[in-house]
Each structure stands twice: as structure tokens, then as C-alpha cells.
Figure: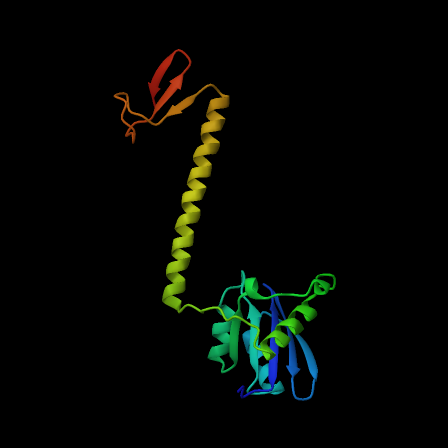
Length: 183
């Protein structure tokens, strides 16, 4: 069985955190708003209940807050947002407080699917992989943009050597009336 009676939902944004604690024994609900400061959140959570359990939704803020809170001795998990089923009535009254309270209630009844939090080395490798993918996508878009710009001005870029092989060392530009190597 659970060793805590207090659950805290955190609605995390880039510059702010809305926290709502729910004491399941008394039904008491407390709210607080913080800047993006794990120390302030940890101090508030410990003042509410030192054994409280926290949750926030996975998203663009990543795992930084979870790692900082855990480092400060606060039990915090990251919930899979795709696995959380919200009632359709909640969609009309969306705000940070309601979202945080919803997370606290879902955690209290055990309806939060926890996301695996990668260690620093694994997260660094994932960031490097994403950066490489982004760089490749940027290169592809830039080539496309340049190719279409040149085409509008009558130049056609051919990625073949004069002998017909692809993977050129010297690009060939097709100019109306002939071809010429890239200057």
C-alpha cells in the first residue's frame, strides 16, 4: 500500500510551475505558483508533507525538474501524457490549476503511467542524435531552397560528374547553351 497520503500535481512550463497538493485523508487541496525553481518547489512540498509524491506530464521541459527534485529528496515521477485520459468536460475549463489538480488526483488513484527517466549519459546521446537529425534536415531543406532559387534564374544543378557518375567532386551547373564547372 502507499506510504503517503499527499499527492502533488505539477503543471510545468518554461518559466512557471503551478503546484496543487491533495491530501486524500482530509480532502484538503493547496495551491502554489513558482518560477521554474526546483528548490522552491521542493521546500513547498516538504512543508506540505515530507513524504508527498509528485507528478508532472512528460513534454518539452524534459526530465530536468524530476532530476532536481529527486536530488533534493522529493519523490517525483514523470507521467506519460499520451496515456492520461481526461474527461471531455475538462477540455472546456483548461487552466494550469485544473491541470495540476487533475495530475494529483490521477496519481492518488494510481492512474499515472510513469515514463522512464534516462540517466545523464543516455539523455546526452539522445540529444546528440536529435541534433544530428536536425542538422541533416536543415541541410536537405537548404539544398532544396538553393536548387529552386537557382532554377528560377535558369541554372540547374546536376549532381553527376561529367562522366555520368553520381557523388561529384566538382558540381556541374547547366547553363542555357552548355555546362560549366562550379567556379
